[in-house]
Image (cartoon, rainbow, N blue to C red):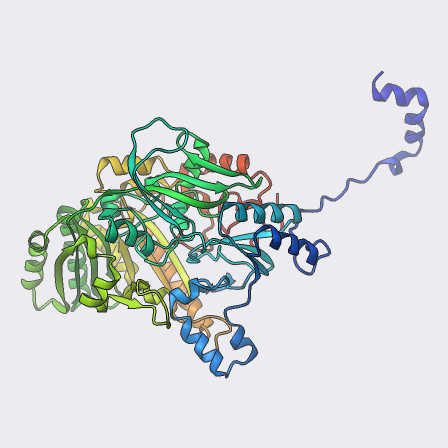
Length: 600
């Protein structure tokens, strides 16, 4: 007997029908799921937090604001000292609530979590994940803390801080778990390792190369998950494509090994799918490569004396780049300024000083032939050095001290140095940021490309990062990058164009260093205008997830292109309830911008 027949026989249906419209039950309003905040009744009790602290061996701490001395006494010596310390990326990195970026205009401001698990191992991470899932907490993960998008901080959250997981192990012959493949040289690093520490172990001490990031204080694990480019990516590919294996804690609290043979879908997603979306990575194993004999550079600055001369200079540079520099030897940057300057800060690998000088001879001759059009602001310097000394802090401080800054704190490790060029990014408040991969096909018409760069530079300076596009890279490195989640636009891009602005050494609540919001909005508008000019010549614009606009409207296609649907499936498999949330991360479209309320 079905339910309707039963109701008829008992007389229930006629009785309900007699009531007419009043008998219709009003549909219940679906209340969206919301994570809890400290002010909510569901926030964990003191006993619950105490139990978590015991489970992680006492490694649960409250997270004070990095500006605490200034909030209590803004005119005090302690506040002045703290503002000075915030010029040091190592100081920032040693604070659980510290972030390299202080905020983004009209988007986010760095605010500390309520509690942090200072994880020493994967079990600590698993305990934090289980606790957050059980109590409906907003969870944040921080290693290096370099996220421009603000993904390594959030108020009212539980932070998993991986800085204490900094073991480094070199392998002569590594075989990923569950695989039957040829062993290969590799390095295993904990999630809290910064790239300078990895380079010191692999290159300075062991004489090999691992593909990582250009900025020395960026965290290894976060860069790998975002795709990752370093100065020599034109030769060795993306950092993600060097990933052999990862240990990761997924949303169910399980510690998993992900490689080509075990959880291969998760392994693929970790290679460029964006940090913090699929789980919490606790260690990674990366393939290492033979180290070239020489690393080197080409640096200089030229000013054109008229707009017409600048167009000609730009077009000639693109002709020169296409014929002489679009290859595995050359990477890094050229900046096209609104003041008609071309600033070169390029690096190279695998060439002697003499060979590199020969490469640049035609460009020097072009400049020398038109002294009435071009002024040499900084002479073009082209040279090489032993590759093994490139990240050797002691060597740099003794032989090339102007290229680096040192951690001047008493008792700081003598290896704590960072590139002078990265100093502007320390404690910066971003006003606007855009990135666009430029396909190599644009180089076939250097005059048109030069005109585009000229028009864009009238609005704001444009930087081209040649090492962040794989056109000109070896075929095997392009193939390896194709097997990652990164937007395939990178494969035939000759450069990543970046247009950005912000206030260095600035942030809300920093006395005497508050950002100028009106100025910032004006500059952000110019950045957006310059970006639109560049996008007009790119059929399907793509952006790099780690260096892009916080307000990217089509982030799914911009960051991952056709790979997004596959990434989304991996997300739903390993994190069906959306425990892991990062702004503009995989699955984030289902949540409010702060990650607390589910929208769908």
